Length: 82
Image (cartoon, rainbow, N blue to C red; front, top):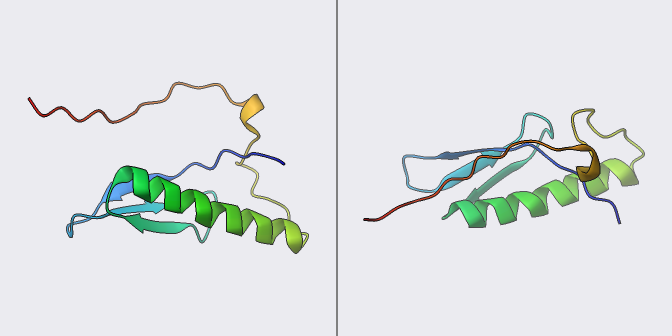
């Protein structure tokens, strides 16, 4: 089993839902009611896309990396309702 880090962008749409896309993994589009749900759906879509690359013998996008090679600062959203 291999793991890859896939960079995604999540934006909130006017309709109130969230949309995830990836410049690195073309075809990754996921929509959910919450950020967590959108990330979960994006993981499933990414998994299927990567499996398809591998099954067809296509090279994976260069910007994707194994987690062991990546160390970086991460920003997470924290909602406060005070």
